[in-house]
Image (tube, rainbow, N blue to C red; front, side, top):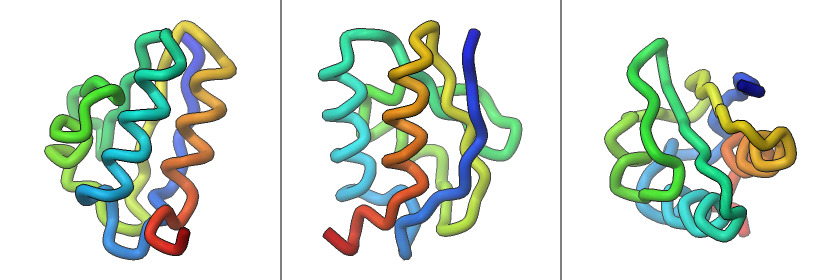
Length: 86
């Protein structure tokens, strides 16, 4: 399964706003995508609530996984972006 690890770019981590943006994008892709932080269990990237349970702060390493490489690339780019700056 394709995966990549990126650092969280949002200034306050994956809180409500970034988590919602990522979850909406993951749901729109139509392919299951998971996120895992700090070697923990993966969570569904299509759920903002599950993303927030990761407790990932700015600079934390998050692994993005999916059977679809394009989905991995798109979600990884969002995790790495400062979504609070938009």
